[in-house]
Length: 114
Length: 110
Image (spheres, each protein chain N blue to C red):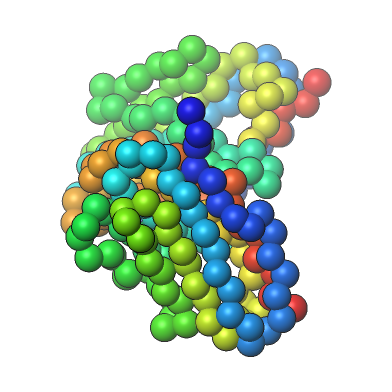
């Protein structure tokens, strides 16, 4: 079956521009996570959606970052006024339910801010 | 203190060798433990869960020591294809997601 998909796979943008990253989770998975991974660093949790509950935004690094999940499926991560330190790979993962710790990751979006 | 700590490596081993990685975690309330594998420029994938009694999956053995708060992964008869970064992952109550270590890099050479 289809796994988690993300688009675009690569994004180069100029400092100060806004970007939108998309994640399409595995069909039927209720939990969706966004992480980012900088070069040589571990995964940094950003935000978590579970069903219709309010998202856990505790990992968002600043108010320039926001995310939404429409219809309990596709999610969009938006970064406004991008900065060079936002350059990283942004990974989306989904799991079957709360406590479903087997998270399936998408291939990521490599964001480069010039 | 970091929540999940791993030796970044790299561990350079020849094919057929046995290699072990350790990972320590700081939160004693941690409940669930996992090893994920991440190939270069790829996404992480679940390798195995770690159970209190220890568990084995083919050439891979995972152990948990709650008293000392560490987790180990043993790989026997290393293959070239085992070359990757191995991520130690922890879940503890009160958190809605997983905490990932930065990973240990393994390089298996012919």
